[in-house]
Amino acid sequence: MAILHVKGVGKNFAGLRALNDVNLSVEEGGVHAIIGPNGAGKSTLLNCFVGRLTPDSGSVTFAGRSLIGLSPHEINQAGVARVFQTPEIFPELNLLDNVIIPALARRDGAFAVNGWSRADQQHELRDRALHMLEDVELADKRHLQAGNLSRGDKRRLELAMCLVQDPLLLLLDEPTAGMSRADTNSTIDLLQRIGGGKVTKIIIEHDMHVVFSLADRISVLAQGTVIAEGEPEAIRGDPRVQEAYLGG
Ligand code: ADP
Ligand code: MG
Image 1 (cartoon, rainbow, N blue to C red):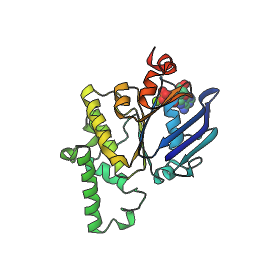
Image 2: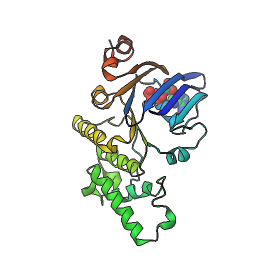
Image 3: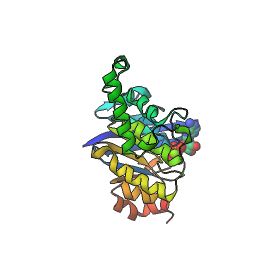
Image 4: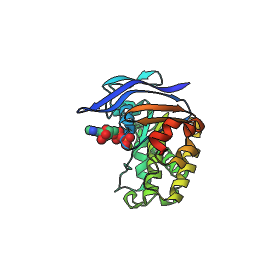
């Protein structure tokens, strides 16, 4: 069953057609990669899913509900979390506090601020945050200042900050950009492990090793249009894709 339906989405920037009649169906629990050359419109499309941009035309439906016109906060509360192209963390705070803050915004209200004063809730909140840091293998660094982490560790931290919110859909915009091969491989392992098959993932990625390691479905975007969509093996062999993207 598809959890995200995108139909006929278009977006213009002052005369530039960034997205043109984009259609996309993302299966629940799957990993759907969106690939394409620089400037193809990948980030613009993701911004339309999280409410940072409003499409000029078309529809975006998540779990049966239209996302058009909802604020980024409302979309987040609906279960959509995003890892940005540049990590967005709290650099002055330690890792544990970085994960505790988004836990307060969980859509189930498990740690709603009005329960904060209760000691048992504070313990549970702390345990939950620590557990998330363990999942991304950062627990031993929990007291370090987040701004001092390596780029790869900042990405891991940001993933923990997303996952602590218990999202249904996780959007990853170039999660391995600028990483060493070793960090890239450990990020692949991490992304395979997290979410336990119940979190749907959409990944924008230019590293084909990452794409073919993770994705079970691929859409190819070129000049704002989906030029191919299918299983990885079909995409790999599609001559249009090779011409437009993989360089023949
Ligand atoms: P990708 O993520 O695939 O590299 P983008 O979605 O960032 O591509 O950009 C698609 C096109 O839209 C590019 O030509 C880019 O310059 C343009 N664009 C993106 N965001 C804006 C914006 N806020 N204002 C004007 N043009 C933009
Ligand atoms: Mg981009």
